Image 1 (cartoon, one colour):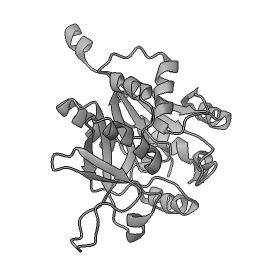
Image 2 (spheres, rainbow, N blue to C red; image 1 turned 45 degrees about the vertical axis):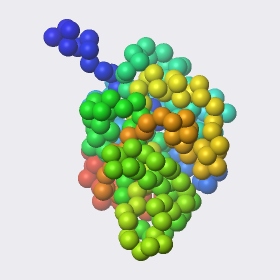
Image 3 (cartoon, rainbow, N blue to C red; image 1 turned 180 degrees about the vertical axis):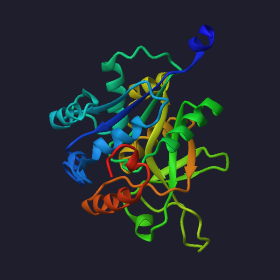
Length: 262
């Protein structure tokens, strides 16, 4: 039994959040059903029983204070990060978690308001099955306005579910009228600790900067990235309209009742 425990991988969850979003400043503390956005994400991630710790990583004292007042854990990071993955890498270093190279760091972006324990479990299980050092959840898009919105990062995958490209433009093309399903990149990703450390050492890449998508850094360096698909709708809150839509869905979502009073 002790030998089994020694070989089990550890999993931690880091939630990057900052007040200075260019598209929606202050969104982490915007209330939905009376609870700030980022604290919904924190509470939903806590529902997943496989995490050793769930920590919000932020450069803003307001988010740090709100997290502590809610009874959560937060860590302060630098304010120089353009990409959320870089913030997560710093947070893991500052927390001194003593993770082994193959232990798992799961990043849930602070605006991924509809994340569920089931989504997280699928990402973790994919890593356990394939051993891939990077896993990203992709969710099906259903609304026409999301297909062309630059706020929605689209992803195309090979038949074996390896990521081929991420873009804020519509991919794949609909010019031939084939009605191909379109998937968006979600803010639910998992990295081995060794890969996250390696990611932090790599400079930003040209297409990463053009698309403003940090996972392009992985692809441009010729590294594999596995994608797990879900047909469930997710929302990354990028605008006030997204916030209103998310609040409506949260009200009807059964996961919400697991951490909030009716």
